[in-house]
Amino acid sequence: MIELICILFIAFFVDLFIGDPRYRYHPIRIIGHGISILEKVLRKVGGNGRAGGLFLVIIVEAAFITIYLAASFSLHRIHFLLGMCFDLYICYSCLAIGDLINHIRPVIHALESGRLTEAKESIALVVGRDVRFLDAKGVCRAAVETLAENFVDGFLSPLFWCVAGAVSAGLLGLSPVKTALSFMLAFKVASTLDSMIGYRNPEYIYFGLAGARLDDIMNFVPARFSLIILFVGAAISGLHPVHGLKVAMSDRLKHDSPNSAHAESFVAGALDIRLAGPVKYPDELKSKPWLGNGNPDPEPTHIQKTVRLVKHSTWVAIVISLFALFLFV
Picture 1: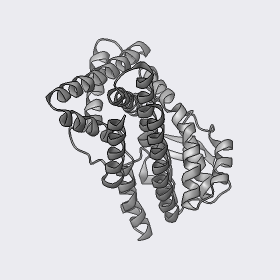
Picture 2: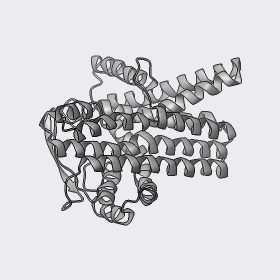
Picture 3: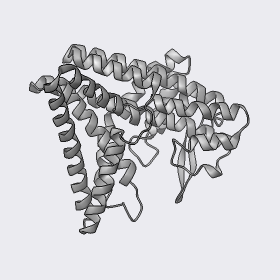
Picture 4: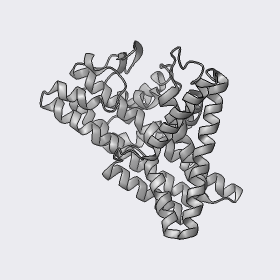
């Protein structure tokens, strides 16, 4: 238990204050490469439908959890510290909030200096929408929305599954560290599958269904739990937690995804701004319902407030998680 607490806290601290640099052999990049290769193989043999997509999910999940467990066990047999460092590396690689904040800061600086083109180039690194059509307010909305959404996808969900794995290990008499990180890795595989094949276009509407549904299932509880974490974070940040909760209760289910609007709607209310609305992607225009409708569009100062809210909320989440591990594992 102490080993897992140390690993989780160090991984959180390093991710938040240093970030997660992009490099060729990052575990998530390796997962993405594996998904791409297996997708090509399945399509060549006719596995283009739901069955092929389900097979892809099962194989990729099983393969990468098995690879992690085999590597961890092997390195622990060589030396305890070597194995622990590997586990720490995997845990750190599964958290992705610090790097997002580092990418958002240049957007704020560019907007405050009136350099819209530079701001659009910076925000394009972390969003999927077509930034060519964004004005300054559109860039602000994109920045605030990606901070809110990725607080769940990039931080709270992997953290939740880490704790869930550790608690499960305690009940079943398994290794807390290896079970916790296996659960954490399983979520990151699901998230990567959704980002690569979870599209509702003719190419992926059936093939990507299993990956998209798995991501929805694994984000379901963390998305709702995020309202509690963000409520405390908003109170610490001097925002409007009660109004954030009111807007979340009314707007959190307005989007097609069962999870994505929870954190976004809370942030819209806590900052008294509106988010979402029509969004232009490279292949389509999505008319998303407004969150916090009637409020003004965000300004650069609202991005700064969202960064502060997210950072405070990550500390709230890690304290709760470490306390849960101490009590139940």
